[in-house]
Length: 200
Image 1: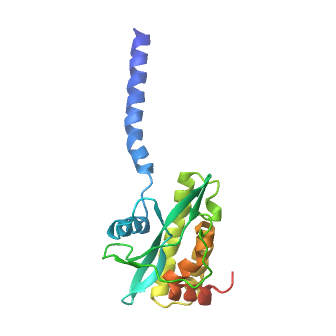
Image 2: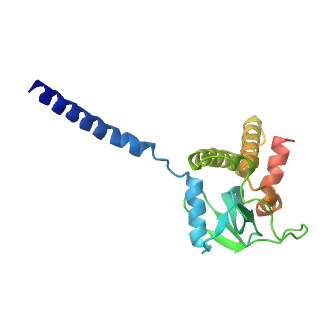
Image 3: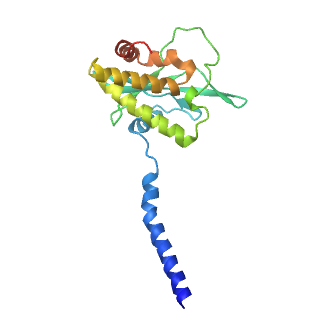
C-alpha cells in the first residue's frame, strides 16, 4: 500500500511539475522582432511571389521620418548553393504600422552579372536556424538604433556607437554580392554611416 501511495504521489508531482513547466516552454518560444514582422507585411503588400528572398531592412527616411527599405530578389539553385539574382522590387515601410510603398528597384550602375553571389552572408554559414534567428534579432535591434540616430541627424558618440554596431552586424549577415543594391536602396543612410562611424 505504501508503495502504491508513493507511486501515486510521484505521478501527481510529475504531472504538477509538467503543468508548471508548460507556460515556461511557451514563454521560451521566440517572437519575431518588429522589423521582421514589418518585412513580412511588406512582402504581402507588394505581392512578392514565392521563391523571392527579402533583403535585410536598412534605415531610410519617408517624409522626414524614420522608415526602412527592403528589396526582394529571386534565387537560383546551383547544386547545393543558393545564389542571388537581380532585385526587382523595393519596399519602403515603418517598423510599426503605417503603409507600405512598393516600387521597381532603381537601376544600379555596375557591370552586369547573371548571378550576384551567395544568397546568405558569411556569418550565416554553419549556424543552426535558432542561432541565425538570434543573430538576426540582434541585427534588427541595432538597425532600429542606427535608424533612429540617422533620422534625427545625430553624429555624437552614441550615434557613432550605433552606426558601428549596425555596420559590423550587417556585414556579417548581408549577402556579399548585393552591396551596391543595399546602397542604392538608401544612399543617404549609408553616407551617414560612413561619415559618423568612420572607416571600418
